[in-house]
Length: 224
Length: 248
Image 1 (tube, rainbow over the protein chains, first blue to last red):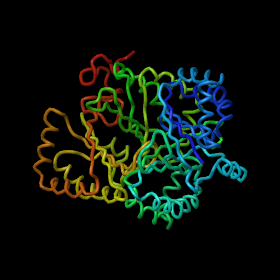
Image 2: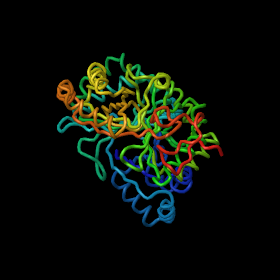
Image 3: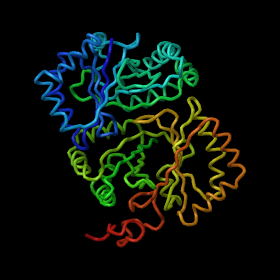
Image 4: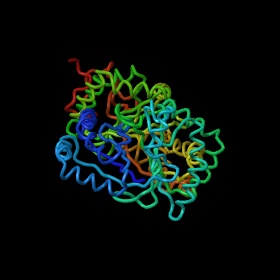
């Protein structure tokens, strides 16, 4: 399954209005072509948003998206309207990794109370060393995911580069958690989890570094 | 204890006015909500960057602050007002090393300095704790001998950050004589040469900045700026066009 990750930089002071107009003026048209999974603000930054969508028809969905912004009236209108709020954004086209839940799985798991009622998500990009990707993904699946799920975090997505903006060896993970207090408990709990100890020991051989940011779901975000 | 570290992009011509309105229109509310100012600095020498460091009791306070920023009418007013003064900002949450002084200790001690040295080290994966131990055992006593005081050592643990970030802040005196002497002593210290070799094995890169302590209400600030409550005419050290503390 393919996913579109979009990072947008709204002008200073308009982020609240920007996420409001996205709900009314962008999402209805966009949902004709893709499954919008999450709309987020970035914690401690009042001019960055993150948008996560699944492309149900793979690259063919991109064709529909191009039609939306170039030919369909609501898409053309949004394209102009959006410039009132932002002048910079970039997109990555990513492929879901085998252990990553797709939109249908997330929908099912929401019925069991997962991916709902969370006020915080962690977005982490790992720079995996050349030739170590398969080994890294195995360690994520066998050690990191069990360790974090024991502590109440849920993996909302795991992705690798497919096209557009990206870097070699990048693996992106997105995790759901309840709130900042929960993140504090996770940091404390990780120290006592065997799977996490294994993960921590393996990491220096597999990764050169990783970058993280924390995401705040807007009220209408499917992932929340 | 936790710390919020905000890097602020300032509209440079309004920097001093921003400090002033932040002191009157944001700081009192922030402190009431559990966000206590440790330092507000001009980054030297980068004229449109400021750094604010806040002390926070625990993780649940961040949830409370998020709620406050999203829903409280006064917080919304501040967000609109501050648009004129800052064009961007990003934040990290920092965990202090056990040997870092708390805000109370900073206030009770002698941590005044016109400039502070800020270092951001990028430590290799899995080596952060060893690096922090090295700082405590070797760098802090060394820097003390050169005339610097340790203000804090912190690890990035949330917000927008990169793996292996360790931030240090030190008093560095004034640029005219004290910093020159500190630097000279450090360069002649054989222990520092050994430190560079050893520490360099686990943190290949350190980025340096000066922080200027020119904000009168900031606990970390130059000794030439008195408390606003005790002085009504402090105009010479900071920016002369701003009449700090003058009765309205």
